[in-house]
Length: 201
Image (cartoon, rainbow, N blue to C red; front, side):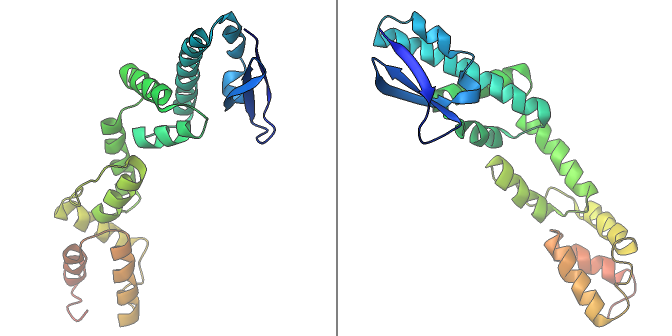
């Protein structure tokens, strides 16, 4: 059985695999180039499919680990990255499972690190929950920060980033909206304003 491959006519980053001179599959050139010679071991279409399935899983696993070596990803993010590489869902699922078994992919651990990082940036729980949902594909509760923690964050912001917030009613309104956009509870914002003896806000 003749198996060949050549650059795709439509996609410069892809290769088209031919079996008996008929197009069979299109694959990512960078990921699959090192593995395609193994396909020539196949004598039947069934063997070609079996060999390709294993090659694809290897390529997916190597690409996943390469991505995770550069930065941490949520499972949902890594799945989206791999799906852009002409990989099957079966190969992606296999790569995800292997990365989780190796400890390289851990949504629970990454969530804790990411929440702590966002809090240090002065983000409130509502903002953090929405960002987490966008990144991970999971819905998170809006109470990722306690009221006391929010008040401490707001007080810090009022003393640093928003030092001029007491200058005028317009400044206080502007800062109030800025804190809301950062995801803080209205009650916590007003509490911090009131404890600064600005009851007329």
